[in-house]
Amino acid sequence: MMKTLLTLLGLVFFGTSWAADAASFYKQGNELYANGKYQDAVIAYTEALKFTDVAELHYNLGNA
Image 1 (cartoon, rainbow, N blue to C red):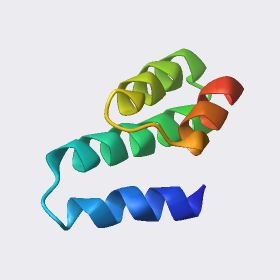
Image 2: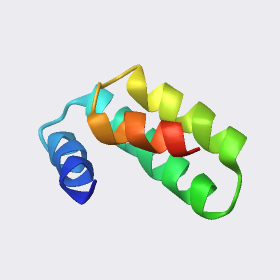
Image 3: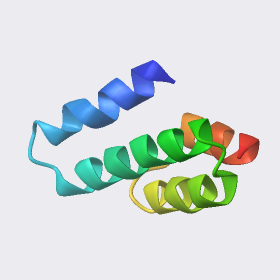
């Protein structure tokens, strides 16, 4: 999970706007999930999946 997040964030430094969006939604989903806002986390993870297809997103989405 952390490796994927670091990969997504690393792509941000190369100027790839879709990676910034994916990482932002991924982080937002994690924060929402940690606060018990599971339906909102589902929305954030689903938005992140529009930009990238990473196994951890599917895993987190399934948990939410």
